[in-house]
Image 1 (cartoon, rainbow, N blue to C red):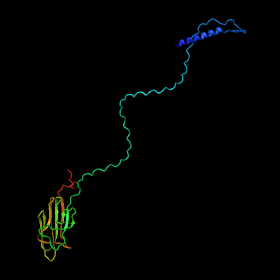
Image 2 (image 1 turned 60 degrees about the vertical axis):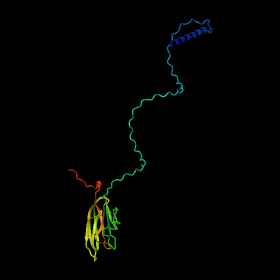
Image 3 (image 1 turned 180 degrees about the vertical axis):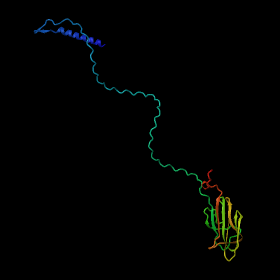
Length: 255
């Protein structure tokens, strides 16, 4: 197609040259020639291809196209690597107070003890009845009743009871009672000239609700004054309750 365009251009060039020659006159010696037109020449040789022209300037940007439709959801990628450990956070607010727990086992060994003395009186206690030792010296657990003179067992186990009596105005016969039955009897002769003394005691095994007291027998010479006392005492030696683990004896390891 390029060759055809070159031939066409050469043809028109030749035709223009021919027309120019036909209407021009050659001037020699200030005279116009009678005729300056020659015979048509033969067509010239086709010219060579021209060099490639320089690139044109960039065109203006076109208008933005319409947004395309959303593509389909791609496949889920593989889990990434674990990140570095972060810095410790700030301390949180204090939580609410929890419920109170159940009461635990007591680590203190069971206790039961008392001591009371006879009050001053001009007349001796009534024989056959519990003697009320109303002046309490010790009764932390409250197991002894000073109004009735009776000790009531709360902690089962082995107890020791003792009587230190002042004998005056005659002989003294006392009995250590348990639930209405005499467990031990003590006698001390006396006279009305000067006071004497009686000491007696016994170990008794008691169960809960058992009661122990002192009562007078045939000779009621029990006496108390500002200078002399008659005292009834009792205390727990050991309990029948299973001991707390900290009170259990250590067993030697097997050889």
